[in-house]
Image 1 (cartoon, helix red, strand yellow):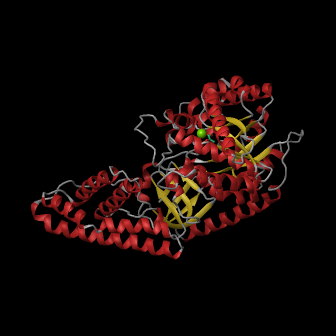
Image 2: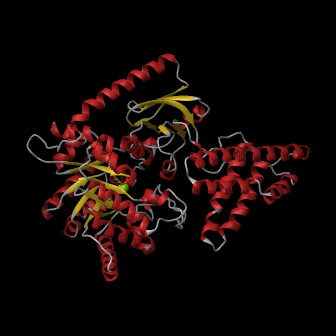
Length: 539
Ligand code: PEP
Ligand code: MG
């Protein structure tokens, strides 16, 4: 069958389908009849065995690749699945005529609550493991996919309802050939990730995805936004040709990788990379990045169960700074909330998370998060040309508070005698309020970077991940362009530069418009850099 959605990351790919089990399964039945008890108990034991078998395969694979720590976590999953107390709790519930798929979830929830209540941070974090394992057993009982991303060991096309940043972060390197999701738009994080990984993505295919979940293989066309399940010979041949054409096109762009792009009237436009992790830095240089226009630090916080220490953050930021040498590296402080949740931080339920406690709002309220990050950034600044940038700023008061915290941390580090470097401080212009207050913000900032992904969603009141709102998900809208113009004028008045680090920066049709408005730096997923330089050179 053919699925149609948004081509969110270019390229074509064909490979086996992989459907991750994300979230908690919904029990199909909650109760059973008296006559079914024995048979259901037997099915429960079979499901435990099957899940243990799958987890054991993952453990073996992790051991083979030397990943002992991860393997240890999965050992715990096995222990949990085989725990006699869990078996007896489920047994009791099934004898009371609860379905085993519901019983194992309910018993798991009780266990998880016990773990969560423990004082020891490590033990309380195990609550999620318990939920994970009992969720897998329940899914197994219902014949649903049970493997998490850790089980992805063959390069595959990932099919999912949606993919949160914490999901994509868990995919083993090189194992995703393409993404196909029911939800999402060009600026959803799954699309951003696909573009920086250089793999095709088709998002927003809607409810039809359900029917495709049983496919064995999938051919994905990220240019025209379609995916074909179980492709026939003709389709495969067509995809092979498309893949060759793409390789040729990319080769033709190679000559632009390392040019310094200027418009024909001599305006120099810096083309930089957006990074999600330090490991992307070398590749970004190879694509021709002249700096890092946006280092999204939140991924460092999301790939794990506990928060990264100051030292770990320092290692990551300074590794990128060293790789880029004199070239600027803009480290954006933590931007969680919205569709990005953080393990270890109590994020209460919000009806409108994109309008909620995210970005600089959360950082200012949580010094135990913000201060170690600022310390790590100042320390990394001694290793290269590091700048700091605050996300989701809505007024000058937030900027001042953030700069005040930066100053406090600087004084602490100086008093300790720790080596630090100078950092310029910039603001993301991604709320309409920031664009409207740009004159005030410009007086106290060293640079601006326009986050068009959020600026579009907040200006047009259109959720960036909602596939029904495609018409309203482009920066090419008079209201958004007016705000960018206002931002550039304010920056021009204060003599500070304006970059764009939202996805519009890498879109060939948008580049001439942004440059005409006064933008002098464009930052994007690294594989898009050579084409952006070509587009700039042709203006
Ligand atoms: C943006 O909003 O344009 C941006 C670059 O930030 P993020 O996509 O991480 O929200
Ligand atoms: Mg943003």
